Length: 149
Image (tube, rainbow, N blue to C red; front, side, top):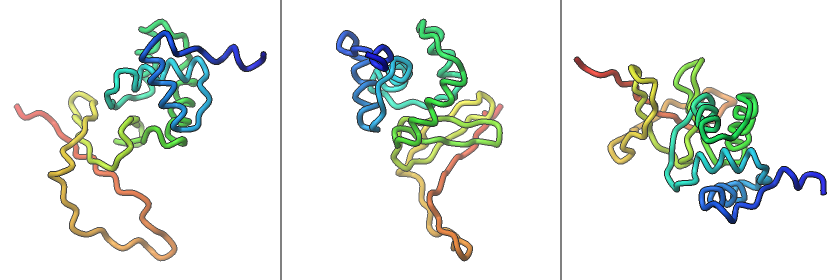
C-alpha cells in the first residue's frame, strides 16, 4: 500500500515508541524519518535544545540517512504542530526546544549552547504596550552569558 512504506512499527524500540506517541500528540503522520528524528529528540523522555545542524549530526551518527533540508523541514513541522518551540538567539542561529512551556533561557555565547534558565527566578513586572493594531503574542527571554576569566 503506497504511503505505508514510509511508516515504521515502533513496537520494537521504546525510543521510537515515545517518538511516535509524541508525533501523535501533534497530529503528525509517523513517517520513518519523523519517527527517527522524534526518537532522537524525545526518545529518552528528556527535554533538549537542538539546532538543525546538531540534530542532523545526531541522525547521521545513529545511522539514519536524512538530508539537512529534511531536518529543517521536519523541525518546522514539529514547531507548527506545537511539539517544539523555536528560540532565535540571533539572525543566523535558531535553537529548537522540546519543552513548549513558557520559560527563559541562558545562551552561553562562548560555547554556542542554549540551556533552560530557572523560571522561578525571573520576574517581569511590566511590558510596554503594543503599538496600535498589534498585540503581544509571546515574550521570549534569552539571557546571554559569557564565562568570566
